[in-house]
Each structure stands twice: as C-alpha cells, then as structure tokens.
Image (cartoon, rainbow over all chains, first blue to last red; front, side, top):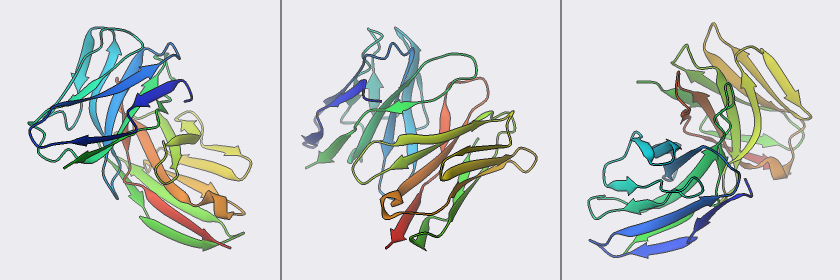
Length: 114
Length: 112
C-alpha cells in the first residue's frame, strides 16, 4: 500500500465549489476505487475502474465524477451537486487476477466544507 | 442488494484476553473475505484474508474462520495488546465483480 498516494491530505471547500482529489499508484494495478468514509460508518464505494478509459458507478456516485486516462491515476472530482461532501476519502487499487481481490489503500484525503 | 453485517460495533477487552468480531454476508457467491485494521486517521491495512475454499486461516495471534453454510466469518485475536486498539472492518467480495462490500466496523479497545 506504500505505492498508492493521495493528495492533498486535507482539503477545504467552499459551498458551490468543485474540488479534485488526486490518487496515484505505481503498483501496476489494473483496478482502482474511490470510497467515502463517514464517522462510525464503513467504507462506501463511489466509483471504480477496471481499465483505462472505463469506470463504473458505485453505491453513492451522485455528485461525484472520475476519469481514468492513465493506468496510474484515478482522480475524483467532488462537484457542487454533492450536498454533504465533508468526509474522509480513500482511494484503493488491486490487481485483477482470478481469485485475487486484495485492495490496498492510500492514506486518504479529509475534505471539509466551510 | 448485497450487504455485510458486522458485530459488535464496539468491543473492550483487558490486555491478554481474546477478542472476537463476527460478520454475516448475504451473497452466497462471495468467495473472498478480507479483514482490515484502521488506526485513527490512517488508511485501512489488510491484516488477514480468507477464501471460500478454506475454513480457517491463522497468522500468529490472528485467525479467521469461515462458515459458508451459515454465511458468516469471524476474526479472532488472542493475547490482545494495547496496540491492537483500532477499528476493524470485514468485507466480502461481490459475485463476478472486483468489488468488495464492507461491514460498518468494530472499534476495539484493549486496556492495559
């Protein structure tokens, strides 16, 4: 998991503003994921991507957008349409091999709406 | 839809005692069950995992058991230490995808 980086560590957003969270991995993993974590709750899947230029919505995709132009990078944009964006955002990646689903996490970005 | 239930939500034990966390999953096709440990403000870290062709797996003080018939799996930590204090998450794979569905977490506190 040391091969996954997220930036920034802390991010403050004003109402009505879009912000982009960065996620980069040098593990040569095929799949990448974005999760949202709220206090006292588990990890909820926002978006995931199994291959470059392709991605799928997770359980809570509304108000978020992603792109996967490079295998190493999977940025997440939190748009103004996301009404309650304050949360801890975690990026993960995994190698797609039959029977191998282990996901490794980045250090996270804590987003706060002012 | 698929879901994973995790119990208890909080668990307090004395140092040296054992701790057990239980999870139940709904998708009978799930075949991969990882456990993650997350310290405050840090990333979740994989501590142990088990696949559906195995009933039990052990790694030093940590063990996981799987009952496919009942669709539940458990994390066992023996000889607990204060540094075991963290939030633990279970997860289960979703059939024909590379997705995991996570439990809501158990906050374990180990008192010296």
